[in-house]
Each structure stands twice: as structure tokens, then as C-alpha cells.
Image (tube, rainbow, N blue to C red; front, side, top):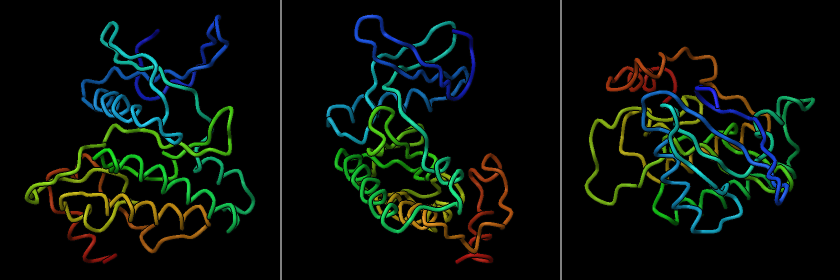
Length: 219
């Protein structure tokens, strides 16, 4: 396999059972893919129908990888190809219920996702009526001790809660706020902060710029 970063959507057919799998590769020197592997392995013990199954993982020639059950298109992409670009109320309610069930399964294992957005919810490949939650590269175990200070921003600007923008210790409530924003988005709603220019994520880590921006423009 050639070194690359991000998602590789190539499919591999198993000769014995004809199952298909997806491979995710990452050649960057960071811990995101290792964290994702760790949490997927833990969550697979739940046997949740909303969490993809990880089949194999490792590192080869400097490239970290894992193999998982193949999934379908994200809610974000599905919405883009609709006219108008939104789901009906009945579809949104059914989708939203599955999204919250997926979050419940993750939270019940003591994990917060920290990057809830429509692009991280996908339909099944062979069962398109089932919604899966993916991309656990920013996930963490939620803190049960004293609140930590100066956490830094993690997530996606549009769907992050006000608390996360203010660098407060994230918890399950922040995932739920992001879920609510996702639910509004798939129904076609726009947000007042959609056109606000926010500094790149790399510039925001460890600074208080987004806190000032939040107070000035949104909060």
C-alpha cells in the first residue's frame, strides 16, 4: 500500500466470504489514528449497530492503518445531492434518532467524540437505513475529576458548542449540543455564524482568540 494521509476509500474483496472492507491510512506523525484505533477497539465490545467494526490494524513502512467494515455516504454528502439541500422532517427525525442512539452508545462507554458533524455520520453500505458514527481521532474519555483549564479547541467550528469555543473542559453535553446543530443542519437550517471568518484551527490552539470572537459575534 502506498504511503498517504487521510481516508482511502478503496475496497478489498475477501476471497473466502466476499465481504468488503475499507482501509484508513495515515503517514503523519500524530496520534489521531492511534487514538481512533484504541477507541474503536473499545467500542466494538458494545456490539453497537451504530459503530463500525475494526477488523485489523497496525503500522507498515511508517504508515499507520486500520481495516474496518465498509460504510456508505455521509449525511453531509447526501444532503448536498438533494434538491433542495435538506432532508424532510420525517427523514430528519428518523436520522436524528439514530444519531442520538449512536452518541448514547459512545457515552455509555465513558467516551466523548468531540467532533460531531454531519460528515461523521454515514449510512451503511449494505444496510443504508442504519446510521454509523465514524472518525474517533479527536475522541477522549470524559473527565470525571476537577474541571481542567485551558483545554484548547478540538472539533469543527460550525458544530462546536460555545463551551468548546471558550476552551472549557468538554463533556457529553457538548457532543449533544453538536448533535442538535447537526439535526438543524440536515433540515436545511443556516446558522448566524456560517459566514464568520474564524482563524485556522492550528492558530487557535492554546490561544483565546476564538473566545473573544465568540463573545463578539455569536454568544
